[in-house]
Length: 462
Image (cartoon, rainbow, N blue to C red; front, side, top):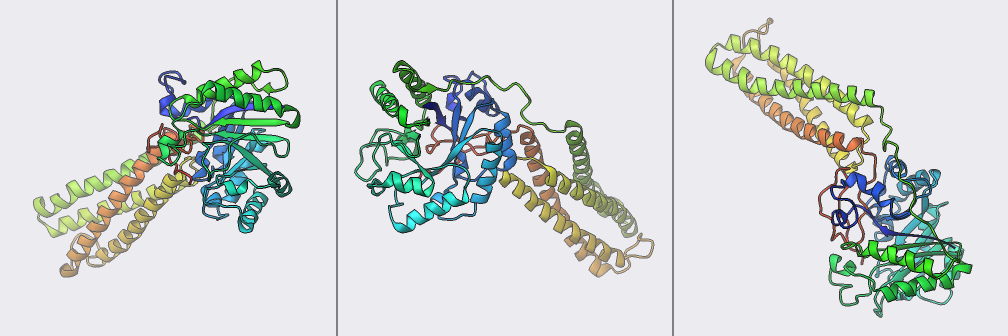
């Protein structure tokens, strides 16, 4: 039997110092984790599936032979929707092509009881995730029925062995073998804290005798198992790391029937093969367009309007300056929006929500730009042919005020777009699907790490 031991997730600020070297940034945690363990369970995919590009980045950041288990999104396990399964399969395809996919995990809630309808749903999920191996973690005891292993094997599913407290309604703890495979997730044995909240549930340190008991159970089934994956999910503090190391040591002491996969040599290549010349040129053009565009707004607001209305005092002079400045400003806006659309189309920002927000702000700015062009043409119709003097005064000034309001909205949208663009550039080249938080986010904050994915963006599965 081949045994891989690890933890669910690797990006925990609390691990910097006790486990990771001091000063380890979030975008360096996966590589550092792979120095100690040969596999990781990615739980952040419970919130949303990774993109194929993020899966490629995960593979690049880890050495050959490293293994990933991906948790299937809650839309499938909790909400009974298949919307995210095609994207999940596409990401799994990429990791499998790199030789680094161990399997997929479907963790159903305690409210998911053993019924024919729920059996059919699990079969449907497994069918849509083929050809990748899928394991199911049950939380409710009703699934502990005679013939469970045979049903799972017929459905093409594996079973997750769990380490949980002795609670009457929970699926019982213990090692289970299905399809000559063991997939174990050890959470806690503290019954009092199981329903006490996200952090309390997984704030647990497995005693040495319990770890030795799990090691003995592995050795006992070694002849009936080809491969085993063990993940300690008690990731509050560094207990999971210490328990994982203790299990590996205990299995080694019990004899040669189990081959414990050792940590692998670290990756020394660059994490993201970005084309630096093209990326730099694109960013330079976009940055220059933003400077001209936003600078034009400031010039128009701070110079043209007050000078034209208070200092020059001439409607003719004001009209002449306004039309020429707005011609240039609208041209900068059109060019800037075009370059920003290009940047959005080719960007490799790993945060899909930020990309969606950038498109939203771009749409607001583009709508304002269209309105400004229309209003500008209308204002020109109120002026003499040389566009130096306002001929039709009464409608000119209300339309001009509307133009100023539209310009203000576009300026604010441009600022938001510029800020999000700079954030996207900071994350674009890091090349990782970063944060992999456990079911308890107690070690992380709700902020986003340097690579753009939410730290602790998890809800407690019921």
